[in-house]
Length: 246
Picture (cartoon, helix red, strand yellow):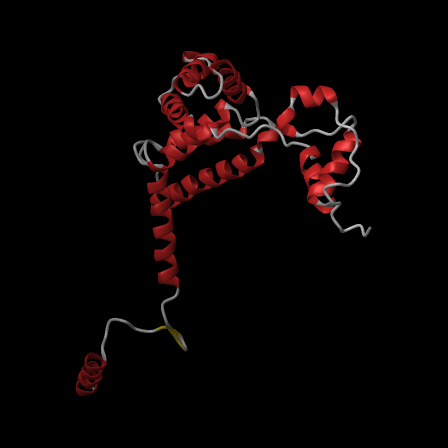
């Protein structure tokens, strides 16, 4: 018989497993070994289909699906950032345990206990923990609103975080922000008003740079800047008057 031919119904079959016949009659198990069951599946579905099924069934399972918790914690982080910008210490005012407890009660998932543990672990595990997210939120908020000194303070705090949280990036941003303030002071002859936002300082410095660039790029004649005060008619009249005086 060819390999791809199906065995006839009256072909010799292995003896049935009496225990399986009694316990699971609807599954039509043939036993008594795994080999017998696989052979039966090959007869019914074909070798390739069985190979694919076994491969899929025995494939290593990936880890638990990651939960998108940080978007759900956004309100908490933004509130912490506002509190921090106001000069308070939100990390002492409310513990990670309290936040996780409130979150798990509101979003229990499969288990309140496991959700609580997961949230508390995320809030406390560095480098990208609750403190990091809070300071980043404070940096974003203080750029467009509030006094510019608060923005500088947020960048200073971020630059002091552990090395694994890329303080070099924040140090670069801090140096650039300080340079912008120095440019403002150089152009205006004084420090920015305390109530001025960092965004407003940036806009002022950029506008000053554009104005300076426009002034430097005015057209020049062969022997220097072209006279801008006299038109052709006025210049001609001035020449005529000079000749009359002579």
